[in-house]
Length: 278
Image (cartoon, rainbow, N blue to C red; front, side, top):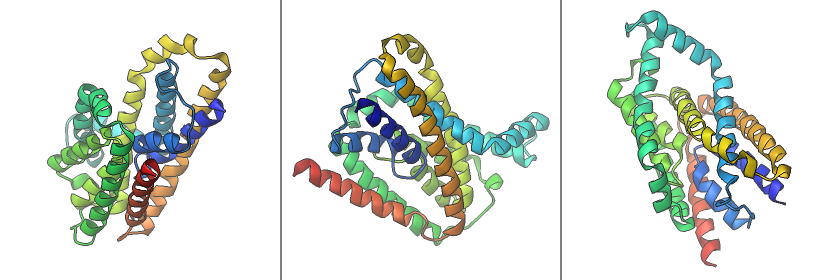
């Protein structure tokens, strides 16, 4: 039963990391509501989460590999010339990565310890829903501009929004999508920037914990080693499917793309609170 719950957690991670509905919030709420017997204090649990993050980051890189190849190549050829649109977008991503990178290193554990309760995750999931509704409202009056023409301060602002995902219930992709719409991007461009921005952050979060994975690999029960591998693959597959679906979805739904996710977050958070106190 433990192996099944861990694999379901991998699927949950793969989907909710990229959908604007908070993977961290769901990883707290769903196991508690469904009574999954997962011991988060076990020495093997952190290595398992590391593998899930690496699977998600790998899926993002595979989906956007052409973009990264072009961006890195453009930055190399430009040698600091920001008139090159590929080089400019690369450095916009670097600027956007800084806030979440710094805050994640300094405050991640403190924030999770402070806000990691079931009730707080449910409440912030509802707040996340309100943020998504605000995003749709902004979209209807935002002036559009091309992604590469976005200002450095707006890229930094989107990066600050990404840092809000350290709070369980607040979605990384949701916060950056809304911040991108606020900056004047259309949904498709905002989603592209959001997912490109997520790749180094999720990947770095996983790689920084690799020493812990190596350290605790011998403490994991042998029958869970296969589960670890399968979990990473499942997280990667569902992350790739999620980004494939969302990129198409945001191109087709220009005005109310975030509303269904906002409704879901409000309902899911409210139902979680009702079940908790029932």
